[in-house]
Length: 489
Image (tube, rainbow, N blue to C red; front, side, top):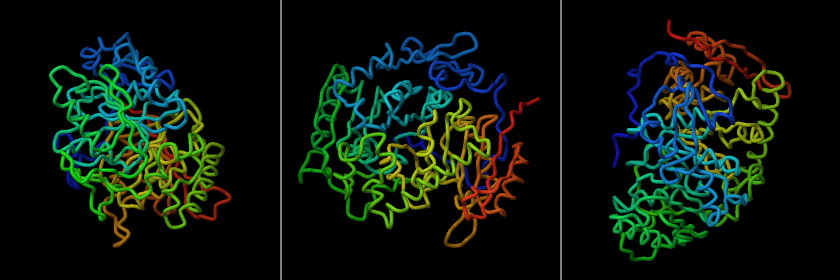
């Protein structure tokens, strides 16, 4: 089940404490939106994909650039034509669909070209024989994540994506008692769409697998919208799971003590998750984009004082982001910042406040904090669960801005009051992820910020410490740091 390609982290104290140098010839990345079509070759001097997949329109080298014509294995003539084909069956331009999961995405051209339709697809692929496909995607400014569907749930909440897409992702959906299709069902919002292009859909010598996929989708009460060549599209029912008592796959509903949102190092289950708010958070019930961004969903209402917390958090972050731009010199809204990470996202207030800027935000909800990521997806934003005492699943130099609100809370144990790992470890990981000349914004108490400044200087960042917003009664300080552009001698 591809266990060897999943996350495997070194034990505490065994990870190398070093700074990752950029490759020779590295330069500040091509800005968005130009980067969708071309990036500097020397920033990622890996030509294997261009050699293997150039004939399918993935990418090609031309002079000092890698160019991306927009093709893929199942759409060699370009993602735009392929998206046009899908719009005949899937309402991609209606505002009904906002978040997608693109499984086995290659260099993520499908997700990249969906952005102009106001759709944010989180593209993922493992580190496999193609090596750096996700690094190419992130260098292009496309939302992407290093991930393998193997033995564990993917680190996302239940019923979060408006559609799930697989274009020759080669995931054996019905293998292992249907474990992988069950996981797709957990992630897909009621009323959402499942799109599979390529094997096994009407594929020669895969008739058995194609028959099993159709039968299992029918068992889950999915409605087959169309089979167009090698592309099949299903629509998930709006109501809760409707499994018959007897079915050929032996599928049953999960027990009541199963939390379908739990997904950090959580083994795949061979049962269908129950979700209490299915109809309220279904596609069509939830507001269209962009209205859903500012309206608390049923999931937020379900939490203690959730609506008030949501509205207060939204207002707070609009004020904070305005202060960052106006007074702290953070270059949000300019061509210098495209890929943004919020390390402690809560309800996604920071991402909502920059929604009109030319950025995308990876909202990270710490796995040991309240699981609020479902609310973030209800807003039409994207994100993952993570524990910041471990490395993040991405390549070096992939984010322009990293934001850490209450950085000490990411590593502290609330029960014992002791830290589970060191501030140094977390900031060293931030340095690995941050691009040269990228920005880190860290908020915390004066004592923690003083420690953060010492660490920042030891890893070659320049630092400025500011007071919090004038209207804030908080005594916390804000560290705005820049990763210097250094090279090996």
